[in-house]
Image 1 (tube, rainbow, N blue to C red):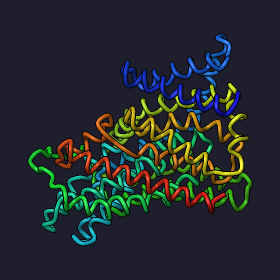
Image 2: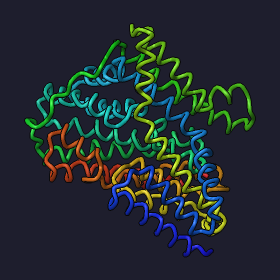
Image 3: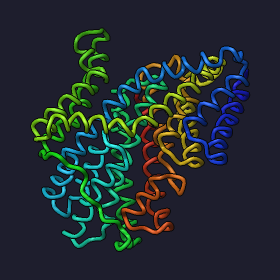
Length: 440
């Protein structure tokens, strides 16, 4: 198999997947699974061995990812129900004042949406943009867009949110390095998109505040302060980053390595959330268990879709794709990064979901990185995240959610949200390209 044959095969695979999702309206998990089976047969895997390949791909992927996503989802649920997410936003808006509240809302979106799903973070935090606009007498979009930029960047760029965690597992990236690259790329993207571009759009578009739905209170059964909530958000991230630094310095296994592994770090973070947000936040212990269990409910689909993406990658490896591409891509990170960005962007435009786009692209790009070491897998992870962020439009649920809660017509949502998402993705990818010159 030549490189061009493999490129054509990958293109046909994406076309089949998108046809199943957009034309036949099959669920993403089933579409990915069927595409992987067809790909296995086309690439010469004996029919009797196809199911074994599917099982191996699913098991190899979910053994790591399911644990990380599940623990992160439970931390996010505790932040939501304890009032911790709202406390962080309220502290920023009140203490920074109207002039600097935009930066506070951007930071709030970044911090809160790291363990909390996009739609939950939006509904929880958008009232603070309304409040800041009322206090200052300035346009509401001036405050809403930095908040949305922070939420969007956290949703796609920074673990333990499911998308980058899934991609990191599929491409073999160290999660601590993914956090570093995600923050380095995400902060400039959020600043340019939310503050610079968002400021200009706020003066040109006037939302219809009468169509904004009333935002009811989330089910809050406790109350904690902003400092306590921030400690819960930062604890697992600090541990994971500490593990990356430790590994780079010593290279050996130890108790420190165990304590800073993403499994252990997130488990410690969840225990901290249960104590700080739950027990000290006056939430009954029976309710704490219920909240954690409810936090797992939305992640089932994400885990299955991620597993199916892993199956797709396993099929390509079984077909020998890694041997064909790795040699051609050796010596330079840039071609792989462009391929990663482009594949994710293509799937994003056609089928809408950022998470599905990231998983699909990672399944295709993963075989290229079989022997990759250093920072390249982390750079590829964020390149994929950047591609999966651009050009949100009518087939993306976030497009409608943002339009509804910010009071935008469909046309204005294109002019505001689609442009903002594209700026975030392009700036993030640009930073990744620059980082690839220095991180090896």
